[in-house]
Length: 229
Length: 238
Image (tube, rainbow over all chains, first blue to last red; front, side, top):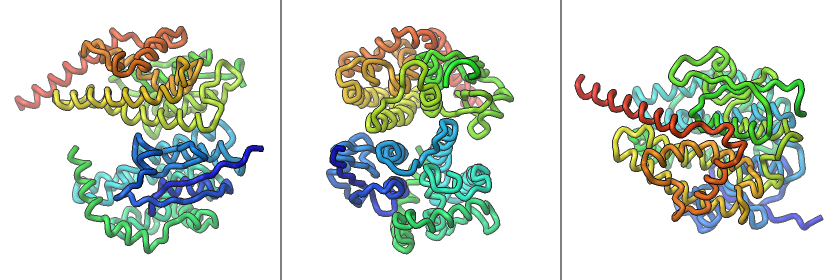
């Protein structure tokens, strides 16, 4: 058997996308070196290994670079032995990929914009986010995790709904859900963030609050710029 | 698991590049299915609304009554379920699969958004931005083709694979814009590999069998532009 190749994960503090890759590596039991980039001052590593997007996370496996968090998680599932992250059945896999796509392309933007805008525009994004949350609540279908009894691909992809969600609510004062809404998602978030493996990859809560608070003005500016396009 | 007992139905729209991807995958795999055309500007069918309640969009592949949505997901699903039928679409090696998925996501992001700017742009400036974006995406995909094909005819190597299908979905739209603008967007001088790939791909029997008619797409595009112009004129006079 060939020498196992070195695995490095280039990420950034607080990145939920980087978190996805890290959790996947840990769940598969793959040893890796974590390299944290300062996104306001990116190193050559980022430009060299992700020339198309210049973003993190980037997984380096030997001398091969894999980019885009969803692609990375599937790669980790396929390239390494260990418990499967995606379901085994092709239809269930298609469903998991469908909801991952939903998280990236339907959920993310309105959620993010609901935090940093105001007035009528914000109301619209909040409404949209609540509709999306309702769909995800239904998707959980009373299960402990999106993957069923154990954490799987979709739980990893949905990580922002856990840890990051209430940090951002605290930082912005924007309350998307009141105490009785989405009980299944609430329970899921507690289960996810208290998992022994996941806990090791979560950014420190106080540091994360400070991180977002420091960048509040910048995010508000970017959100408004995005809207005026 | 192939052949008898598998009922395949595809809900589609003839002009959609995403639907074309699903049709290409089924064609290259040699699978038979029932095709249902959804009305382009009309009401969505009950079956579509029931099968894709979240997005209400095509394509939807219905396999033995169970719906699969999103074109890239449909292509992977077809490849996984019908592994023993026809050629393999995804590469065997995990790294090559990751590279193929990365570029397919890139196409959905950069190539599609450029087309949208050209088609939906309200000003000449916006449309020009779209064209610029399209050329830039083509240059990036030229490098991707070189990396993936390693001198062989397709992204998938000697035969068509997942990434050829992901880009092939847009083949008719590229040719349509070529006709309308009177130039080649996959320029043989700037992007020779990509230009050759487009010719080669479109000449394949399995592609020709499902490729929409470029003349009809040109007509559709002109009709849409006329509608946009009429709407703009109406807005001026109100």
